[in-house]
Image (cartoon, rainbow, N blue to C red; front, side, top):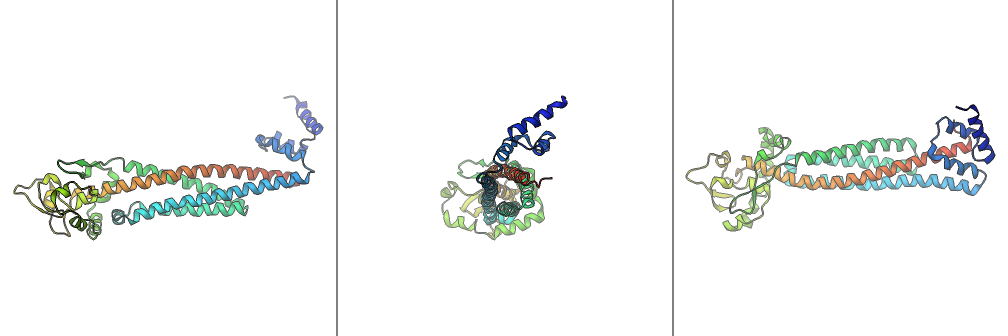
Length: 329
C-alpha cells in the first residue's frame, strides 16, 4: 500500500472541509460504518448551523418515536394470540383436554410484555431496554414460528369417512397423528376427559333437535357428537332417538359396538370413535387458531424488522451526536 495514500486522503478531507482527521481515522480503521459517510458529510458540512443541528436532534427523536410506535403495534398484535388461546379454552373439547390453549395464552402474554418493554425503551430512549426488546422479541418470534409449524404438523392427518345414507362423517383413531393419539389413549387421561365430556350438553341437545331418523341421518353434527353420542354406523344399530339405539341380534365384532350403552352417562364415551371425534374437533379448532397465529407471526416479523432498522438509525444518529460533541471514545 502506498504510504502517501492515507496522507492524500487526509489532505483531500481537509481541503474539502468535510471530515476532521478524527472522523477519518475511525473510518479508515473500520471502526465506523462506511454506509454512514454521507451522514458524516452532512454533520461536518453543517456543524456551525444551529438549524441543521436541531434537525439532527429531531431525527434522533423521530427514530425513538418510531421504535415506540412500532412496539405499540407489536403490543396490539399480542391480542389476537391471547384471544386465540382464550377462544380455545372456551370450547368444550379443548376445555376437557387442555393441551394448546395455555401455551398460546402464555406466549401471547410474553409477547405483550416484551413489546411493552420496547415501547417504554423507545419513547424514553433507554438503550438497554431496547436491546432487551430486540433479543427477547426475536426469541418470541422463533417460539411462535415453532408453535405454528407444530400445530400444522400434528393436524395434517385425520380426515372423516362418509358412511352410506349418512350426511355426517365418522372418524377412526388411527387416522390421526401419534402426538394426538397419545393424548387420549392413556386410561387415566381418558377417564378425566370422558367425565368432562359427559357433563356437557352436546349429546342431550341432539335429542331436542332431531326426532326422526332421517332428519338425524341428514344432519351436520360435530365430529365429537358423531363419535361420542351414537354407535358407529357399521354396528347396525336401529335408531330410536339420537342417543338411544336398539342393538342388532348379531352384534359386530368391533369393540366400539360392544362399548356402546344407552345409559346417557355412558353412551359411546368409552369408544375409540369418541376419541377420534374429539381429535377431529381439536384438529378443526387448532387449524383455525393456527391461521390466526400465522397471520400474527408474519405481521410481527415485519414489525420486528422495521424496529431493527429504526434502532440502527437511532444508534447511528446518537453516535454522530457524540462525535460532534467530542465525547466519543
